[in-house]
Image 1 (cartoon, helix red, strand yellow):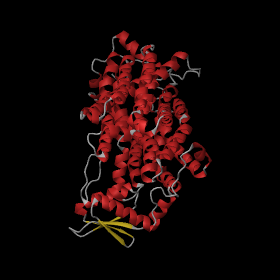
Image 2 (cartoon, helix red, strand yellow):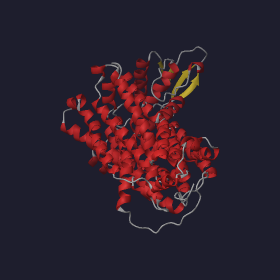
Image 3 (tube, one colour):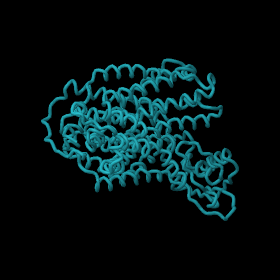
Image 4 (spheres, rainbow, N blue to C red):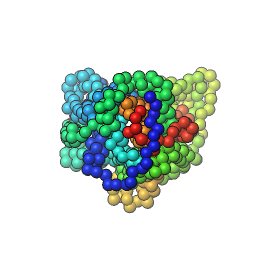
Length: 558
């Protein structure tokens, strides 16, 4: 068996048929679920931790919530194997009908789950179980949706057709924001904290019902149906996809020369950008979310543009150009974002010298991807505190066995305990010229009208839009590329695993990895080296090893 390499002429442009529109809509609804739940989880994280945390300590409960989200990311590749195999054995339609149902039910059950105060430890166990089920289902959902749409698309139009799936982030975002905002305006804050936060999760059952109804009306993809009738279905898709070097090699190239770079550019442009605005620049959450929302609104049509363009000039040049341009411009763009969002902070970085003095032997690894490590060494605690408070520092090696201390200009701040040190270092840096929390110089426009009329906000939206534009370059063509890389008999399995390793692991753990780099170096921009190195690696590997696939006829025999 070899990868289909036959070429097919591009079909003349024609309007999309009603059946094709229904195929795209039904396939995209699963991705809407994914984004709807993601934004709910972020917006309502405090409510989730308060209700399902295993203890009474708010910090420990919030860390537990982060672990739950990380667990969902971690199991996605396993879901890709389980449901990818089913999709290649029994069909695309029925498999992603199952994944859709599991995702919807898991989201709905979170809204019904009693709190820890009611059922004890069964509550956190139930929450983690819901996250695991959803993560497994998501592992099979995207591959099924992309494969199903692509196998219904005419040759020469797959980039355009599959790019519609990539626009669903905006739909999921706005659906979640609309539901939450409506509730907050309709009931008191006390009622929202007590029970109102559950309603957005319960509303998902409506989305699920509509999605299942639409998907039940669909037919199986023509490519799979043809194989089924000819009796050429794979009997062991996982073994064929990853147990044979000719196919495993393609999966590795798809991961390292495609989805790894796509994932870090995607997560940097949306999730890390939001993290940078709120955690590093200390912009309030409402303003930051509105800024991201408007940048997504402006950028979403470009998913379609670049998907369609990939049908003409190829998937590879657009994807790799997005990785390269992003890697070359991240530092100046994020530097300008910092200047616009918190100018006093950047001024302080230039004028206030902060030095961490510690015995190097006492400084360890500060990497903590899921927020479960406890740091006790004074050097590690100091680095994390300064990273969390966006303080730029230099490191100076102290004598062996010497105590850890921080010099803010000529003022010494000795390490006592974590809470006391955090307060002392913040007070010392504010006195030296750093902005305090809520400083008037920090960008704040928590209303749509104020945002659109303010020149600083307009510039910020423009900068964030450029980041989203990079996202559309790498994400618009990726579904068509992955589908075309693998033969029909193992397509669902073959494309799903590299996609979810790339996006679940390379992308999903970007924020904590970047934070660890910032904490270790004392530079708020140093975390960008992670996406830059990965994106450049993808550019080089993709340029050398990734084949162009736009003219492959996926209906040809495998």
